[in-house]
Length: 191
Image (cartoon, rainbow, N blue to C red):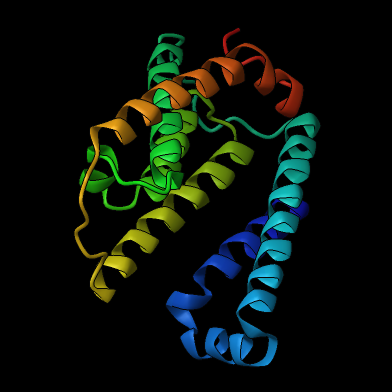
């Protein structure tokens, strides 16, 4: 559990610096430069993700206690929610803005919320509640903080961006559901 908590602390902590300690972020940028700060941010975030994954897997292998036993049919809802999460993450990373990106305002964070909720629906053990619950809470706080900062200015939208988001998102979702989840996480997404 310690490795999972450390990974969460690194990832969420680094992503919360702008919200809880903007002067620390500004000092880091002043000292390291914009590129140097981004490299540090990326390295710490990747280390956090790695430790979260290793810690989560290790704690589940040790026998993470069960808090609730979700019904089997929740798996179908999770599969649908994950398709949406992949579409949202693609929409958030395209250089152009589609209607999906415009309506969601923060598609990456909405994707993380969707991913976390989907996984909480089917995983009732302590490790899952800690990991997915923490990521859900972080995404909620981040959206609130962004809205308080004034959000993002409106931009022109393109239906082409929506089509690209849906096609690539569904292709990634299918690849992840069929092969990548088992390969990367060690658990079949559709079993």
